[in-house]
Amino acid sequence: MSPSPALLAELLELAKEAAIRAGALLRDGRPADLGVAATKSSPVDVVTEMDLASEKLILELIGERRPTDGYLGEEGADRPGTSGVRWVVDPLDGTVNYLYGLPNWAVSVAAELDGRAVVGVVYVPARGELFHAVLGGGAFLDGRSVSCRPAPPWGQALVSTGFNYVQSVRVRQAEVLLHLMPEFRDIRRGGAAAVDLCDLAAGRVDGYFERGLAPWDRAAGVLIAREAGALAGGRPGQEPGGDLTVAAPPGLFEQLQGRLDEIGAWRD
Ligand code: IPD
Ligand code: CA
Ligand code: CA
Image 1 (cartoon, rainbow, N blue to C red):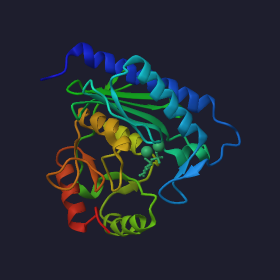
Image 2 (tube, rainbow, N blue to C red):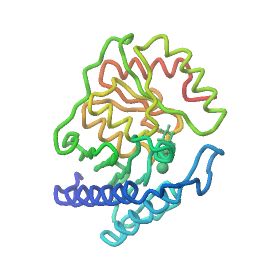
Image 3 (tube, rainbow, N blue to C red):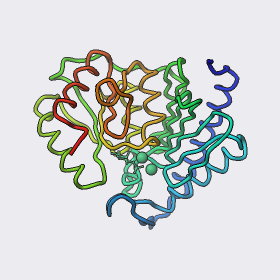
Image 4 (cartoon, protein in one colour):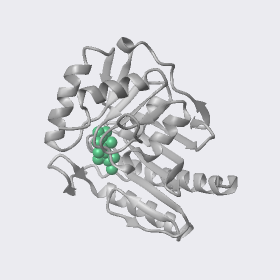
């Protein structure tokens, strides 16, 4: 059954409010001497006190407004719900950029209904940009409709990607680039997967791929990219996942997905 417009509107408003409030906290509350609070998968996979403060704000806001929804957040929140709605949240995507004062970082908030993303919001405070999409309703940047650029010839594609924090995966990612770098126009590494997917949606790159993303990195961004006209998947025939996330307009997507599979970009 398709979700009611009233439910979608409610989820979208709450996603926007959560992303904007957490984004303002991150932008205005960043201590001048911000340091690393903890590390996760490797010594360069860092968490700051602000990642944790952002997750707390969003978790509490959503818990107050919709107490029966489920919630999955990067910093440990994992709460089952009973309403069929589950929030998938990266409270600060691009932590390393944030730590260094680079502008590519975001709050990413997605709402899934019965396991399918129906609302996605990505707020990029340092760029003053709010992206959103509702399933079947198109993608928007600051309220204006956006769409991917048409597929270029393979050799002219500008493709963004990202690198995992785990060293063995990074070595392999560098090897994959040895194949692809001479084939494309160029590669971009922005440092925040949710922003990469939104930049694809806004026609600022031609394609995007990454190995090793978690659900919170991609949930909102994949919906926004798809609603902007991109195709998105994992390995051929699969949904975007931890192995691989690939997104590009029709015409480039199939080539990119096929080439990444040929190179074995999803494995060590
Ligand atoms: C990371 C960023 C980065 C991507 C990594 C992610 P975080 O998320 O999205 O661009 O390459 O795979 O883990 O740790 O900054 O939330
Ligand atoms: Ca992330
Ligand atoms: Ca994060």
